[in-house]
Amino acid sequence: MKKIIFMLAAVMMLLSTPLAVIAQADEDTENPGNIEKLTVTPLDSAAKVEWSGVEDNVAVDGYFIHYGLTQVKEQGEFYSLDGENPNFADAKIPEKNDDGLYEFTVENLDNDTTYYFSIVAYDEAGNESGLLAPEAEVIPTADAGDISDEEAPKVTDAEALNQEEVKVVFSEPVVLPAENAQDEFTIENDDTFESLNVLAAIMDASDAGASTVILTTEPQEELVNYKLEVGTGVKDRYENPISSGTSDTALFVGSGEPKAPEDKDAPALVAVEAIDATHIRVDFNEGIVLGIDPAENFVITSDDEVAESVTVLGVELSPNSEGTEDSTAILTTSPQGKKTYILTVAGITDEAENELPEAGILTMNFEGKGETGSIDDLIPPKDAANFIAEKLLQAEKYLITLKWKVPAENAGDAVEQILYLSRNKGDAYSKQTGLEPAADKYEAGEFAPGEYWFKLTQKDEAGNESEGSIAKVVLAETGPGVAALILVSLGLGRLIGKKRK
Image (cartoon, rainbow, N blue to C red):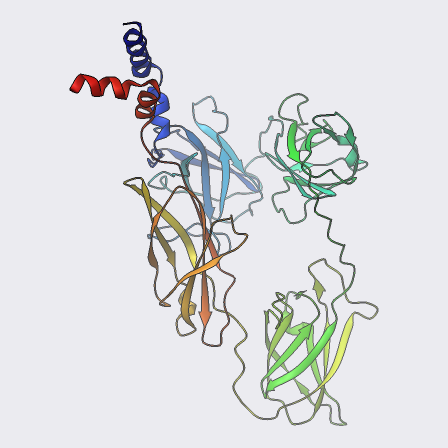
C-alpha cells in the first residue's frame, strides 16, 4: 500500500513541476516571432536602430541587425556592404529605452550614404524570425548629431590563441590607454590564484569594429583555467570606462600551442614565365598584397637597345602549385615579342605588411612568347553564396536539406560542385557527393543528433577547386519524452501493466 501511495505521489509531481522540463527536452524548431516595428535614426557616421521585441516558444536569445547599401526585395538576396558577403550586427538583447523599444547603435558608417536596415530575432537553437522586419532607410550626415552613449563596455569573451596570446572581445569598440595598456589586464590561475604576467596589449588589426584586443602573455600552462580581469583604464569611444565588478572578467583555458614565429621577411620573386603572348605567370615565395592599381605594381620593359615595353592590362592573384594563397600573379599584357624582357615589381607587401627592401623593387628577366596560345586555367570558380542547412525532425531522426545560390559568373566555368561533410567541427572533411554545376539544393538525408559541418566547393575543368562555403547545423538529442523516462525509473510502467491485466 505504501508503495502505491509513493508512486501516486510521484505521478502528482510529474504532472506539476516537470512539465517545463518535458517541453525543453523536445527539439526547438519553432521560429521567434516577426518584428513589426523598426525605426532607424541618422547620426554622425552612425545610425540608431530601435525595434519592438518579440516572443519565442522558449526564449529569444538576441537580434541580428542586417544592413547594406542596396534594398532586399527578392528571395535569396541579402544585405551587404561589398555586394558579395552578407552584413549584419549581433545586437544580443540590449536595454529598452523609455519608449519600451530595444535600442542599438550601428557605428562606422559613411556620411551622406544611403543604408537599408532590417532585423530578425533568433533563439538559442538557431531559429530566426520567419520574415525580415519592414525595411528602413537612413542617410547618416555630419550634422545629424552625436551618439549618446552612457553605457560601460563589457567583456564578452576571452580565448587563448596560442601559448603566448589571448584574444579579448568587448561588447563595443574600445580605446586602450596610450601608454602601458598591458597594465589594465590581469590574469591569474583560477585554481591557485598565481598571476600570469601580461607583457603587451594591442588592438586586433583584423577587427574592423575595434572591439577586440590581443594580449601577449608569459607562457600559459596547457588546459589550466585562467581568470582575466580588465581595469577601468579601458574605455569606449565616449569615455565610458569598464565598470569594476560588472562584466569586467572572463575565464579562458590555457593553450599549449606554440606561437607562430613573426613574419619579418619581405616577399621575394621565385619565377617569371610567359604563358603565351599576352599572359605572364609571376611566382612569389608567399602570398602578396597588391596596391590600389595592381597594374602599376608590374612594369615590363625590353632588354635590347630598342626601348620597347609591354603594357600590363590586368592582374589576378591565385594559389601557387603548393596551394599558398595569393602567391601567384597572372598578368594579362599587350602582345609580347620573341625577345628577353625585364619584369620590375614595386609597391607590394605581404600579409604581415612587410615592404620590399632597399629601393622597393624586384626584377627578373623572362623570354617573351611572341605567339598567342591558350592560357592555363589557374583560377578556381567562385564559391556559392547563402549556403544554409535546414533541419526537419521526423521520427526521432533529422532530415537535412542544403540550399545555396550559385554565382552567375560560374556558368561555363564550373563543371562540378562537391559536397563534403565533417563530424569533428571542420577538422577533417570527407567527400559525400558530386553535384551538377547548376544545382542549388540537395537533400542530404537522415542524421542522428550531433553537430555537422557541410562544405560545398566549386570545381572547373582544369581541376581548380574553390576554398568552399561552410554551413553548420546542431541537432539536439531526441528520444522518448521525459515523462516516460520518469515513469520507467519509478516502476510505474510495471504498476500500470498490472492494472491492465
